[in-house]
Amino acid sequence: MLVLGIDLGGTKLALALFDSGGSILKKESVALGSRSGKEVGKLITEKVSEFRKHVSLQGDMIGATGISVPGIFHIGSGKVWAPNIPGWEDYPLMDEMKKTFPDIHVTIDSDRACCMSGEVWKGNAENCQNAVFLAVGTGIGAGILVNGEILRGSHDIAGAIGWMALNRPFEHKYINCGCFEYYASGEGIARVAREILEREIDYTGELRNINPEEISSYDVFSAYQYQDPVAVQVISLCVDYWGMAVANLVSLFNPEKIILGGGIFGPAIQLIPAIREEAFKWAQPVSINQVTIQQSGLGGEAAVYGAAYLALKSILKDR
Amino acid sequence: MLVLGIDLGGTKLALALFDSGGSILKKESVALGSRSGKEVGKLITEKVSEFRKHVSLQGDMIGATGISVPGIFHIGSGKVWAPNIPGWEDYPLMDEMKKTFPDIHVTIDSDRACCMSGEVWKGNAENCQNAVFLAVGTGIGAGILVNGEILRGSHDIAGAIGWMALNRPFEHKYINCGCFEYYASGEGIARVAREILEREIDYTGELRNINPEEISSYDVFSAYQYQDPVAVQVISLCVDYWGMAVANLVSLFNPEKIILGGGIFGPAIQLIPAIREEAFKWAQPVSINQVTIQQSGLGGEAAVYGAAYLALKSILKDR
Image (cartoon, rainbow over all chains, first blue to last red; front, top):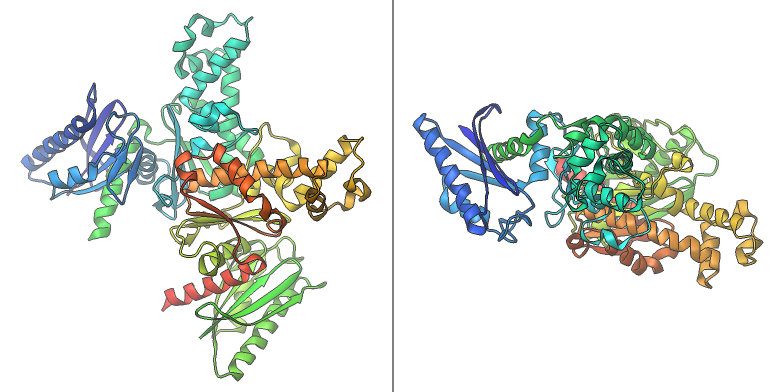
C-alpha cells in the first residue's frame, strides 16, 4: 500500500508518493496560477486521479492520502480556511475528497501541523513525543506535538504563535497580525527595515537603493551577509524575538525538540546559535537544558512528508 | 469506595475524604510547623492511616488517594521536588506511600496540575477538554489541560509560565524567577511596590508607613482599594502582564477556559474584567472570542479536589 502526501501552498501544489517506509517514489509540483475556489479543489482531485492511475498501472494502490493546507482545518465540518487562496474561506475539501475518492482514506491538517509531523517521521524530531515546529515564513505559526499528538485546541486553531505578546505596552500596529509576527516574520523583517530606513536618514547603504515598498526579507538577509548596519539592527531584533518565543515554548511545553523551519530558516539557520543563547536567558533553566533547538531536517518538503505520515497513522489507527 | 485527596502545601497539609460523586465527607488541616524531610512524609502517612481507620470503622474503605505537591512530581522515579519543604529536593514519596499502603492506589501530581483537575471535576472548568489554570501565589505556574489530560512535557515540568518572556530586552533581575513572575506574582507585587517607593520620593501615602522590607502583596491590594497612587501603578502593571499571559495561553492552546486562581485571585478577582480587556488586545482574535476567563470555582480547595479526582480517574482507568 502506498501513501500520497499533498502540500497545498498559497502559490503551488506539491505531491509526493511514499511507500509505507517513507521513501518517495514519485513527486510533482504545479503552480496554482490564477486558480481560485473550486478550481483549486479540481486541481487537487485531478492530480490525485493521475497518481492513482500511475500507481494502478504498476499493480499497486494508494491506500491513504494526506493534505496539508495553508491555514486551518476544521476537523468537525471537514472545511478549510485558507486566507491566501481566494474562495477558500470555508472550503469543503474533505467532502469533495470523500465523494471523488470513496476508496481512499483522506486526512487533512494545517501546514504547521503537517510540518511538525513530517519532522517526527523523517526529519529532526524523529521519535519525539513532545516537540514544536516554529514555522517562520511570510507569517508565523507553530505545529505543537503533545504526547505524540498534534495540539488542536478547542476549535482547531491552537499554535497561533504569531500573536504572542512579547513587548509591552500594546501598540496599535500589532492589531492585524500580532506582536511576534509584526517584528519577526518574513513580512515583519521587511516592515522593520522600512521603519528603520525612514528614521536613519544618514544611512547610505545597500538597502537605500531599493524602493522601500519593494524591500523583502531576502534583501535584508543579503545585506546582513556583509554586516550592513540597518540589516544588522533588523536581524538582531528578530533574534531577540525568536529567542523569547523559543524560551516561552520551552517553559510552557518542556519539549524534547524545537525545530525552526519555514522560508526564513532558510537564511536564518546561521542565527540558531544566537537564538539559543537568547532563549537561555529567559527560559525555565532546567527545561532549556532538556531541549534541542534545530533547523528543519526536511526543509521545503516537511509538509508533504507530514501530510503522508498523518494519513498513514490515521489508516493504521482505524484498522 | 472512597477517595482521599491530600494537598501538601509549603506550610500545611490538608486532607479531604470524598465519595466517588465528589462530595466531601470529612476534612482536616494541620500545620507543618518545623517539620522537614522524612517528618513531612511521616505526617502524611500518619494522617492517611487515621483516615483509613475512621473509614474502616464505618464499614467502608479508601480505594485511592491523590496527593498534590508544591513543586514537581517526576512520574518515572516517583520522586518529588518541593523547594519550600526542607529535604524535599528529591523525596521518594511514591515509594513511601506504596510501601506503607500497598492496598491503596496512589496518585501524585503538582499543585498546578491538581488545581486544574479540581476545576474540571467540581469547579469552573467542568467537562472542559482544553483549559488552563493560571496559579498566581507567591510564585506563578500553570496547570494545562490538553484533550482532557494534564500536559506534562518531556520531563514533567511543563507549565512553568512564571518564566514567560513578556518584555524585552532581558534584564539580569529576571534570572532567579523569570520575567512574568518577577513582576506579577505575589512576591513580584511587593517587589515592584518597593522599587516604585524608592523612586517616588515625594509620595507620602499609606505604603510609606510600612517598613519596605515588610511590604506584602496584601498591603498593596489594601492600598489599592482607596486608589493609592503607588498601589495603582503596581496593580496596573500586573494587569498588563496577566493580560499578556492570558493572551499567550489563548493564542497557543485555543482553550475553552482560563481559570485565574492561587492566593492573589483572591483580591485580584475584581481585576478580571480589566485582564480580559488587556488579553483581547493581544490574542489571536478568533481564539480569544472562544475562551471564557474566570476565577477559580473552588478557591483554596482546588488542589485537594483535583488530587482526589486524579486518583479516582487513575483507578478507573486501571480497572
